[in-house]
Length: 418
Length: 191
Image (tube, rainbow over all chains, first blue to last red; front, side):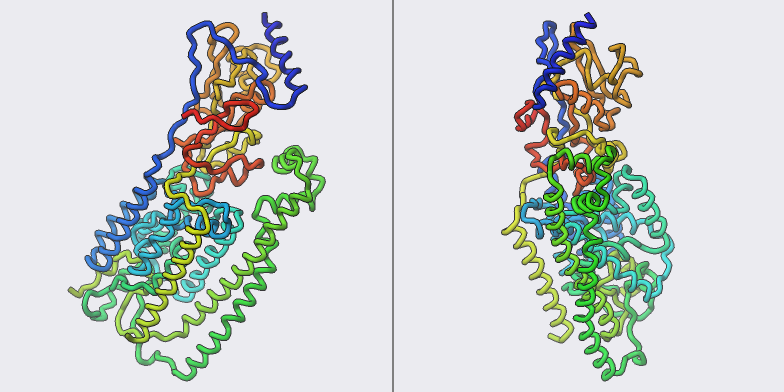
C-alpha cells in the first residue's frame, strides 16, 4: 500500500516536471466521510473609517493645546494632553502613521506620479503645519507621540551652551533633506526606519532600534528632548513655520517683571533674554556684515550644490537596484554565489544586465538632480543660520523664542505675574 | 503696521502659499485615495520563499504567516510541505517534519487523505513548507501578511528587501491575496 502511494506520488511528479507551468499535480480529493474543507482565515485589518478618527483626534488635540497654551495658560492641561497623545498615538496606534513620517509620503507623492497617497497621510502632514502658522509649535507641545514620551521623561535638564545648540541645530535640516531625497527617489523611508521610539511604543521591534530608543530616553533625562531638538526633521519645518506664527504662547500674561523665573523653568533654553543697551551693535558695521552675509548665501548654495552633485553616486548606493547593478559590474564572479539571493533572483528573472544598468542609471540621474537641490538647500540653511546670528532684534522682555519653543507651557506655571 | 508685523505677515502668507501649492499639486496632479485604506500584501505568484519575511519584519516574530489555500490542497499522505525530503516514516515525528517550529499540523481525515493546518502562533514565516509544497505538490501553501499582526508601517521593511518585489500596497478590498487557481494569476479574495 505504501509503495503504491509513493508510486502514485512520483507519477504526477514526473509529469509535472515535463510541464513546468504550475498546475494541479494532485487532484482535489473526493471525500467520503463528512469532512468539510476549511477556508483560510483572514483576520481583518483595523476598520476603514478609523484613520479619520485619528485625524479628528489630532485636530482636537491641536486645538486644545493651542487653547491651553495661549488662552487658558494651563501647563496641567498640556501635560494631560501629552499623556493622552503618548497613550493614543503611541501605545494604542503604535505610532504609525505620524506627522513626522508623513513628510516622506508627501515628498514621494510630489515626485512620483504613480504613488497613491492616502488623504489621511496628507492631513497628518498639513494639520500641524497650519496650526504652527497660527499658534506656534503646538504639535510638538502635546500632539506628537515622539515628543510626548521624551517630554514626560525630563528629569534634570542641563544647560547646553548656545554655540553647541546652534551647531547641532543644523542636523534636523540635513536629516530632512536626506529623508526627502531618499523618499522622492523611491529608495526608502529613513525617518520611519530609524525612528527610535516606535519600537518602545510597539514593545516590539529590532533590538538595535529599541536600544537606541532607550539610549535617547536616558539621555533625555538630562538633555531635554534630544530627538526633537537635534534630529527631528519635521521639527525643522515646524521651526521655520512657527517663526511666522500669528499668535504664540506668551510667557507673561500682562507685563514682564524681569524675574528670570521662566528661564529656569524652560528645559529647552527656548527663552530669549532681553538685550542690554551695551550689547547693541554698531549699526554701520552691522549693515556691512549683513550685506556680506547676504552675498555669501548664493556662494554657499553654489558650493553646496557642487558638493551635492559630486556625492550623488555615493548617495544613490542606498537604492537596491543601483546597488545590485554596481555589485554585478564590479564583482561579476558573484553570479555563481548561490547564497546571494538578490543576484540569484535577478539571474532567474531573465532580465539582462543592460536593462538593469539602464534602470539604475535612471535612478542615479534622479539622484543627481536631487542631491544638487539638497546641496543648495543645505547651503541656504547654513547661510540663513549665519545671518540669523547678526540680525539684531530689540527685546525688552523675557519671551519665548518662536522657532524653538514647543509650547509645553512649563514657563506659564513659573511666571508670577497674575 | 510696523516693520516686524509686516515681515511676520508676509512670511506667513508665503509659507501658506507654499503649502497650498504643494497640496494643490498633489491633489490635482497626483492620486489621492480619500476613502482608500491600503494594506501590504504578498503576491504569492511572485514570492520565491527566500526567507526574508521571517527576518526583515519590524516585529520580532514576523507578521507574515503561512496560509493554507485548502481548495488547492491534494491532502497528500506524503506532503512535500510537511515532511523533510528522504523521510522514511510518514508520521508526525519531529525528526521527519520540515517545519522548524512544528507549526504545520497533520491530521488524518480518511484513507488516504490528510489535512494540514497551520498553527499561526508557532509559524515564523520561514517559508520552508511553502517551498516544499510548491516544488513537489500543488503549491497550496503560501506566505501572506496577516492584518491582525501587521502594523501597516508607512513603508514595509520586508518589501524593501524582497528580492522579487512581491510585496506591494493593495486597496483594502483586495486584501488577502490567496491562491485560488494555478494558472490564473487573478487571486481569490476569500471574504
